[in-house]
Length: 330
Image (cartoon, rainbow, N blue to C red):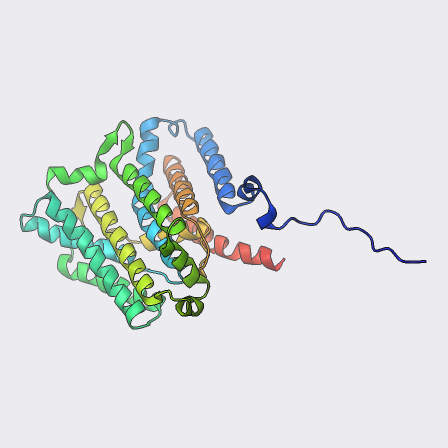
């Protein structure tokens, strides 16, 4: 008499053997799409003004400038680094544009000054982290105070106003109908960063460094060079965001963009990018930006105080970091 082992059924199929459609439905991006649809429906019922086309267009200003930075921040965090000085870079870049404006610079020069200042700040962070090997979180906390402090020294209690009329287009202009220049610019940048991360050898190097920087170094990837470029890109996007934000506000103050770093990191982490590095996607970051924009706009229509939004962002950031670990242990 022989024993026969029972046949087990219902084993989970490994992800690599599942169809692309099945993998897509189980992805984090699919969850974000469902959340975005739910928030859109909720906002449409809670406020009669939400579905107005021009109101929806204005809602994009709540997230496009931060989302531009989040595109570059996503690559940086995937590589295992972080930049907490992005809001202060905006302040310094805006201050530099204000000084150029007072010196009589035209619109093209103002744009170049803002973007150039962002690139220089990113290069400084990259040199300290990639060149000297210092921890990025410590370096960027220091430069966060440094860049903002310079803006306060230059401006004090004053504000730069009186920018040329043509400069307002970058933050207030529309390309066609309800589609603002900022929204179109963000869409183009999202496509570029998607291609860079998911369709190039540079993107594969970013993932490799985030998973194991030592192994990436031994496999021939120039880790320090890649990280330096990533900090340059983050500074570049901060400079572009500074141009758009200064244009939209029409003035420069040293407190400009205060708190942006929290919202940018929240967008990236909510988008499915691992805070430990090695995984994430641009599509997830774009969806997270849309979700946060709709939530912010919905709170505004309901006259919810700004402090409640800050509390919501803090809870959201902690949740998207902690919940996956809790479910993993379970």
